[in-house]
Length: 193
Image 1: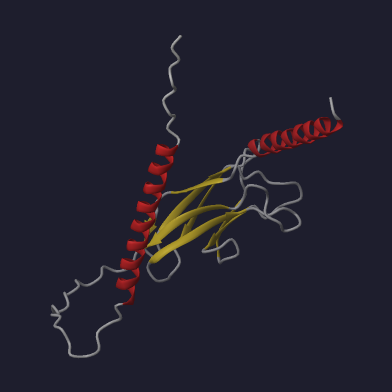
Image 2: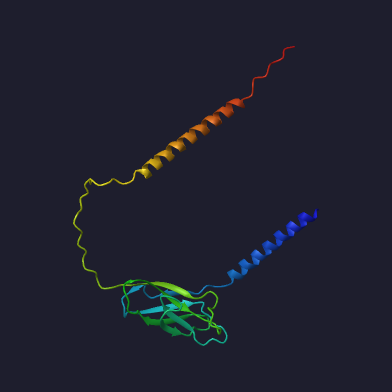
């Protein structure tokens, strides 16, 4: 066996081993998960967030922080998870305009870094007051104006590209059919004894 084959095989085996080890390590991390008691509400409503896989690291005493909009946003609640990493916390929906907001459950280690597989995030819709009915705008009619018409360049460009495409297709078809006719074997002469 040549040295080159041995080197290539060794590098391939090493790459496969690293890939399998990385996949196994990633599979062992359970991502943090959060759920909200409701996905919609108005400012002032009380919402409960539950979470799993928020295990407290050594030297941390802050617990899980529930934050509004971003992992560094305003603090809504703070709770210490149980030994299995589960928690339940309630908070009031803050004042703000209607729309969709992220609620993050953040757990930091003693150095202030996010614990692996966190933060957990949930999407929440803040609903506003019932909107007044929308009155339809008056219908507009379009008439041809006497001004300068729009550019016809896009239409010409698309038409030209279509013609070029058809010409190329036809040329390719002709070339293939001629090459097949040229390759047809000639009939062999039959010898008679």
